[in-house]
Length: 189
Image (cartoon, rainbow, N blue to C red; front, side, top):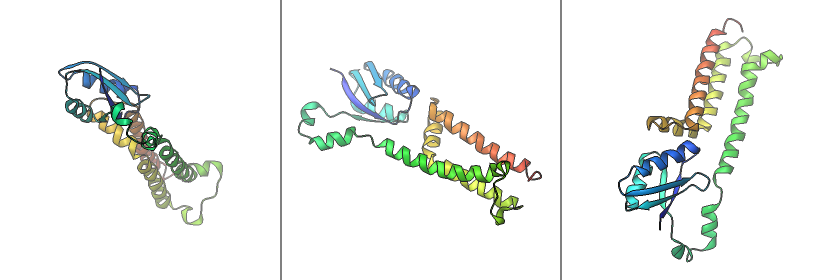
């Protein structure tokens, strides 16, 4: 009977493929199947659970051995329900709302003049203040969404890029463009 594991930190099919590939390379593993949908992994073979967990963690993900059903029968249902509950979605919603608040402010300072929106008196003809406001707002958006950068660049270091890598690199490039465009547009404002 295959051993069952919980796997955390996977966000796309590339992540699950990476975990599966790493575990299959271990000596003693005859088969491995990873499910992104259930964040689980089934492993057959003679490899120890410690070696399997260490390999998954070295790849940049988390892993733990699932509790056998005989033991889980003694665990109260509230703990089982808590383990299955979706804890990630409320965090994502809060990050989205916070990001949107800062994004609206950033768009106001960077693009408001195109819509003839008035700037507060302090910012009129004060290019340094506008540039600093844009820099701070963009930095706040990046800090709020730092999970993408940490996960994306971490997977890039492990030579296993995923969707977080794409998001992190795109956001980093656009942040650089924001700095360059603002520097080039000083004379136009």
